Length: 471
Image (tube, rainbow, N blue to C red; front, side, top):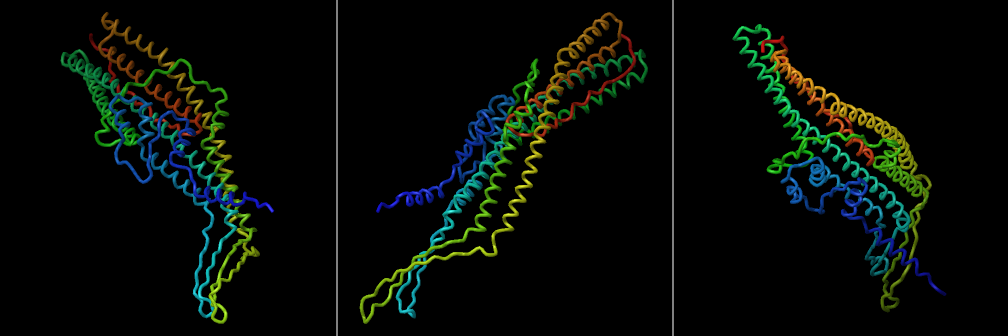
């Protein structure tokens, strides 16, 4: 008679598989693929946490940073992201633990009162061989969900860094423009004081110019504080301390392109990206598996087999002998079918399915909202760049010509200069708004719904009024 050798091989394969688990390297590779990032993720080692930025981060900090470089540094050095990547090891360990089968039970007894020298017993719970693969598959879905969630956090961090960096670049540009405005107001103040001393303008006009200059000094101080605060926001996102905080900005924001990104089928592309939705789907799969496990455990008897041996004294002074036996124990599920546990999983599944449907609605709404912001910011930025800013420059040039022809006074010239700078400030804010909307657009295409709230627009520089004075 031929014996089937597949059963022993299957048992060995099951035992080996139960002890295997994905590595941290596999987790990082999966997160990078799911987040569609071209930048590297940190090289983490289990049991070792670096206290300082690594050499590749410091090498990038030696050069002026743009938004792309800032994102690369954040992905390598942001402590919260590094912690979330390490926490994938928790889900990975649960997969490993769930796949482990029960340990055998060994028992040794000395029983002289039963006319035996020694009793050996080995007991094994067979049910675990059936349940372990099912439990492992459920935990595997949770691991895949955790990877999708961390991939979403990678996209979120990239968006946060970009928008903070764009705000920082805009604040630096605004400060430069505000300084120019302050210089213009200083010239107006000095001219007003000179004209007032000569008796050519009333005291009201001179006081108005002085107030305008002093209010603008306060505004410049506010922008300087805003710039410092925004820089610290970026510092925290990049995880920098000490000498690593002395980096410099590369340049101001790039001009808005002539054409906005294509928004055709944007909603369907967002839904198909499947980071947040994919994570929820994997959580649903895990709950469905656990519901099935609870149902199976409720009706599947717990079966244990044992083999035991007794070493007894021989008859009439003979040699000791071993006696062998075996047994099976079965727990009959008459009352406890795991009803409560199963219904708990079913309720969790229904609740998560409600949230899944709600998330799909929110993603579609976010896609439409981002499309609206992107179109509006692009149109306004192009309008400033192609129409309003050139027209305001023409106003400034014509006012200067009339001033040279002694047709307007110095205050009208300074007012035209201030109005030009106000338009430049508004243009800078609109460019920042466009690139922030572009970052939200790219994040949604990667499957992550981000917060699209933008920083407050810049405050218009204070302007001193006054009537026309002498030339």
